[in-house]
Length: 176
Figure (spheres, rainbow, N blue to C red):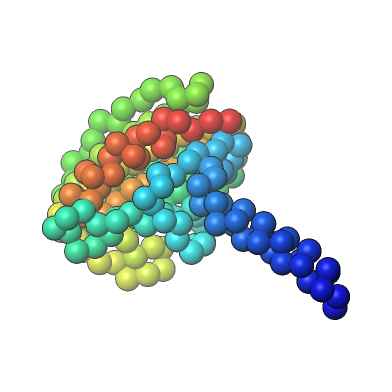
């Protein structure tokens, strides 16, 4: 290898490294829509059935981080809005069914809900169920052009409350 070639490659590698370092700030997307997660949320490793997973820092006094899972199954997949609301309600022991709120965001139907209590839905379909008292869920379902996108923020109540404004801002800024 010549010195000139090595110098060009070094510049190229540096440019790629700078681009990749900025990548978390770019919007994520699924189903024809995109969103930008808050800067304090960190992208987690890919998981089955998820378009994205973000870890949220624990609020002062909480011992666990929060998590926002974003699910996209494809057009006509993943069940209806009502089925998903009921599924999320079923993940909290003794939770009463909330009255979901409906509105339009960027021309798309948005359904939001909130639950709190003892969370039992963290094990996934094949994992063990665990009971976590004092948890909260903020959910949002956006009916996009290529199917629904499900945003599910869960964690200790203080942590979820601390993330409420960021969650709402992310969901309400979703765009095509």
